[in-house]
Length: 221
Image: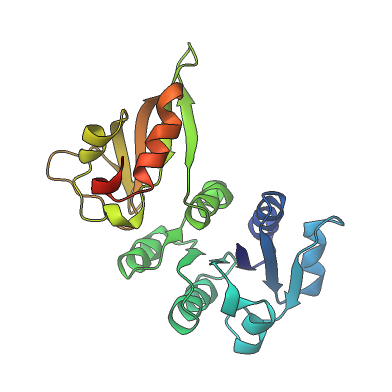
């Protein structure tokens, strides 16, 4: 996939290097040309000097063919504006913006713009939103046979009861993260866009769980 990143600070450069190492095509935008030094000599992606919400700059970075866009500059307003342009003007589906003010981040999330407000988790959380397939282990028991994983059901699960996961797979739902807050689901909780789903699962069952969740609930088999 092709990913456009606005901002080549510590988060943006780390994100770009990680994505390239995972085999993705990456273009990085920053107003300061010297910022690209953070990418290191082995970075093969594209670097574009300019403003991240400027049309010509975005086109040079390949926004028209981008699968994802991450706005991680040091300005909240710039990040939100660039994220909205990427989504609303160029139709990029996977868009995320880093916001320093947690209060504003929640507001923007309610408007449908995924945001990350915790600086220490920024790179990791943005990667999870840009590349939603599969799972990521968060904890393992002492025997090494059971783990707590963040998994990502397909969009076809939106509106489905969270606890249906337990009826269709061998996983057990531990909790969900919604709008930055943990929530223990009950029988009335449904899966919504932006939710992060955390499940307990045996190592031997993880692949089957991920496969089942990649399909619509009725097609999981």
